[in-house]
Image (cartoon, rainbow, N blue to C red; front, side):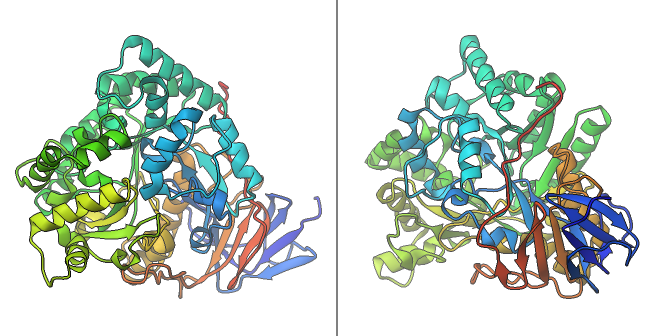
Length: 542
């Protein structure tokens, strides 16, 4: 056997497959796992005593929004310190590549509330060039990428709210094929975000046919997560049936108190589709609040034409009146109405990337509006006006947290065997605590304290299941030849510390994190130079 560089001794291995834990040592050579053998049989110049600890595959975040942050802050401490060793970027159909030079300013503005801002010019256009930029940044973790539907549509059709022609669909398919060959894992869409929301089901099917040629994955923020949840799931099932693509539902949830009871019927729909051969999976974060761009409170038609057209509408008294009426309408909406779910008291300002008005961060819209007007209380209509004013003043660059979910529904979804873990973590301003605490929260709260999952089940959902779903062949399992991405944690102590009031708090109990065979986290310290890489999708067909 070749000489290992590092041996992890005396730990309990939970290997990511769901198999019961066992006690053996692990030898690492360069970036891969060299051997797994009985305690005391493996020797190296460097050894780590893992007595009392669990050694697990590095956790995989299948829904991440670090697309620009990884270039500005490649250490990503909020992620790696919770045991994450691989993130999947390009989510919700809105991200940074492929992109034409002339579209970069518009996309940068529209992404500010979601992915933050980069303090320098973007030096890429294609997916291949973006992945190369990631590798130059020397990230702390491995990074993979999905082709954003919105970026593809923008390149071919602009921000037009209309059906794609056959010629335009063929052009989008070719751009998808090129991006798959360059290493993307598949296609993502966000069917509440422009321009993705302008697409019909047929467009999704046709674009997914190109993804299915490579056996890639289609990852979707569905058209509804509330009033029309059944219709939205049915659309995903139809896309899977007709195109043959692997379908993955992003941040699976049901929003709005009046909709929570629908969960059992929705799960039954999914079970039937899986039994019929649709390859359908999902991911989830373990919280009752979500987070996205504040612009999502606007009805879809307000986004037609792009950011500049939206700003013109926000500056128009008559258009604002239409927006306000749509947002305040409590009837069954034809769109996912965040205002209806949460109200101004349930929507919190999480990020203003410009740096303006830091006093609003962490305040809900009712509080922020009262602060702005210097009164004790405002009407709901005044809170709407404040939100619209802020979107106009900040040119749509605002992030939010919205409370709309049920703990009981979160638990039901968590128990589904095809659902893996993600953070969906936005990182700017005063972020949602999921950006800092998702994985330790599951290990501490739902495994140790509540016994909802076994430790083996939880680790599988955080690693092996995610790798299997996204076809990350050398990740997510502890086995010889796998990439040496590992997390070593204390199962008796591991817990999240991040809260909605104080979200930038690192967890407890994550003792060591290894990425590509290199020790990245040890105790409170982190390596200055990252050992992560861009992970490219390489199916046999490419």
